[in-house]
Amino acid sequence: MIKTHDRPALRRRRYIPSKYLASLAIIITGAMLGLSPAYAEPAKLDLAAYKGKVVYLDFWASWCGPCKASFPYMERLKATYGRDGLVIIAVNVDHAQAKAENFLKAQQSDLAVVYDPKGEIATAYNVKDMPTSVLIGRDGKVRYVHKGFFPDQTEAYGRQVEALLHEK
Image 1 (spheres, rainbow, N blue to C red):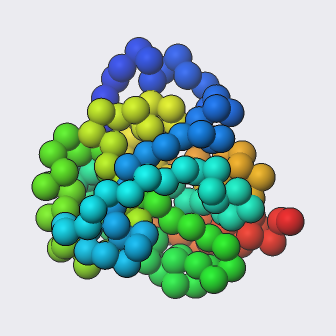
Image 2 (cartoon, rainbow, N blue to C red):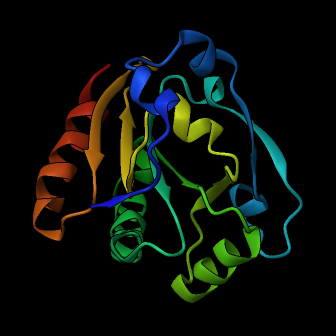
């Protein structure tokens, strides 16, 4: 695992304020609209719009080796479970959006991408390692947090996604 930063504010927060889940408005590329991330106009996204869906938030950076390995896995998750109610949002914490766009172009990814250069969303979710994945249940509550990406654990990750998708 790679440490992203060592900020006191990240160490203090142990929960996600409900106001974040209910009203967090963040910038997302047009990838949600099927547009290329490099040329898309940003659109607003409210996580409350995904209530009733299982949300997989993946915090990543262009310089992170394990992040590169996680993208094909997330693409497979999307292909397998997208129709069942899984939404995958990749939250990039690079300071320069161009680096993230180059990474995405190399990955040939069509995942929805949120740019978080100031780390505000990462701070809200207590992200300290890259990558970190946060699984949010249909009820809007954080159910699982994965620090790092371990290919030998993808089967277990998939079972967690399936379990959340089967909850009503």
